[in-house]
Structure formats: structure tokens, C-alpha cells
Length: 200
Image 1 (cartoon, one colour):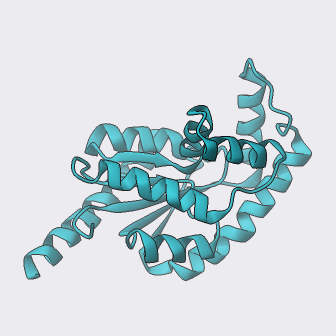
Image 2 (image 1 turned 90 degrees about the horizontal axis):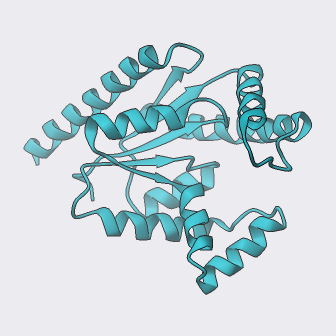
């Protein structure tokens, strides 16, 4: 696994990381794995595990980390032979998840943290909710603020632990300007991996 780049994509809801992931996939051909999408796919498959996950998610509970990690690991193994790199989107959400990921799957080469103010994220989420045809019960200001607060607390621990491999990007700017910074970081990481591989 060590020859295939792994990038963690971190950022709160509404920070624009989905847009950046799509642009990274288009430019580099990396495999985009979103923990949320993997959970929803498992539920949609109608499997026994999917039914168990649905019960947890419907009741508003948090899916155990072992389950999420299992789905991520299976997705990485499935794509390993053909993938040029992995974008792990929305994971880790807390320090212990990062430690477990690196122990069980592989160390991350780079973490991109899309930093955005709470007010900007709130505005974007509310605008997205207003435009959506299906309304989510948790898309109200009080619930969103609570989600953003939890995210901030957990993320500061992750950033502290993985300080050396994390690049914090100001996500309040234009999409293309942000992407230029993303490309610079990824190219730099790929060159480092290439040099390290030659040494080995």
C-alpha cells in the first residue's frame, strides 16, 4: 500500500471539500472514498449489515468506528490494483479514528484541512437545505451549530496529532484559487513519495 498515495480530506459540512474532491479526481484519477457514501451504499444494498447500520443511523446514533473502518478497508482493497491514489473524505472525524486507520489500513501521506468559519459553513448549509427538494430534519440552525461545534472540537485534536502531514487551506476563497493550492500540495507529496521509492 505504501506506494499508493493516501490523502485525508478534512473539513466541516459546507466547507467545499466535495467540490475539491471532484476536481482532484478529474486531475489525478484518484479514487474518492467518502465514509458517508460507503455507509449509505451498504444500507441501500439491503444486506444484514446494512439493516443494522440503518437502525443506528435512523435513531441518530453514531456508527461504531470498527464498522466504518471495515467498509473503508474493503473499498481500498477492492480498488487497490487499479487505483492511482485514495482520497479519504470525511474521515477521520476524531483522533482515535486516525490512529486506527493508520494501524489497520495504511499511513496517510497528506491531510488537507479545508478551513472555513462557522458562519460561512452555516450560510452554505442553510442555502443548500433551502434549495433541496427533500428536507432533512437536522437542517435547522440550532442542530447545524451543534454539529459544527462537535466538528471543531474533534478536528483540533486531529490537527494537533497529525500536524506534520497536514496542510490547512483557507476555504473561504474562490474554488480555483483553493484548487491551485491543493495541486501544489499533492504534487509536492507525489514528488516526495517518488524520491523515497528511488532510495528504497
